[in-house]
Length: 373
Image 1 (cartoon, rainbow, N blue to C red):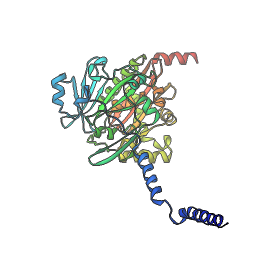
Image 2: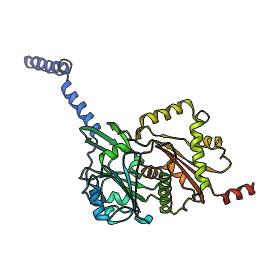
Image 3: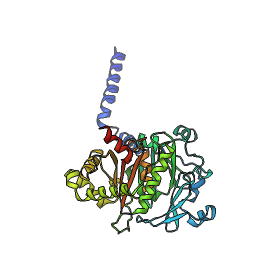
């Protein structure tokens, strides 16, 4: 009996201590460490891997004279109001190449050509081909000028605009055409250019504002022609006919551009007008303003172009017109506006950091449509 009572006494003491210990001695420190670990895991996600630097990636950040030594002088050099000079290579579309040069150094290379310098990538390859060569990552955390940045790619980004990191601390954006799923171009760029363009979601850090020094308010014919060439180049890659360019289509685009500036109240709601004004003040990739399809249709009506079947785009601010066009063709929403198989005219109005693209049926098709009615 005494042993039984002793056993009960010990049992209740152990039970008492075991029950009350969490109350008087909570595992606060352990929980805090667990919470901290969870936050760190969420912040850093999976660390991305850098692939060996090769091809055009070697020249990013180098003096442009080194590129000239290896590839010769460009066909053309264009002054740019965004703080960089645009160098163009390749008379034929198959050889086409663009360089952004800042202070005699290369910040960006946009390769449409299928030379050995694009390896391990190749123009026309599928995303699955890239996945066999390397892992496609969704998060990229790095430092630039002692500031921390964290970039996150959405599902469509990973499928049509994946980001690749090289071990020389530069990057490449692979632009896949949304219609064919094939690689259209490879854009090599340094951290500053990436943070300025920022086609992805930035979850830590701030984008770099556009550096503008272009004061002229007139239309920029050089940039307009450059945009048209890029769009037509991508159309050819997709097996579609090129757009026709004529004086009337250019005038219509410029007319719409001016109509938008003078008739905001008839086209935009007060809220959307405020959004556009905010975009003008910010001048960053995180504050892009683009007309919706409904707003563009209102613009066509106010500009008295609604009888001719037309569509197009308006976007502001534009830092790099070529990369803007590549982004359109890799996006499911915008690509559809350039996917028509019919012959059409194109007009592009470019002024300062604003760009309007107008696509219209050719006169022959319009007359046939009117006769059928």
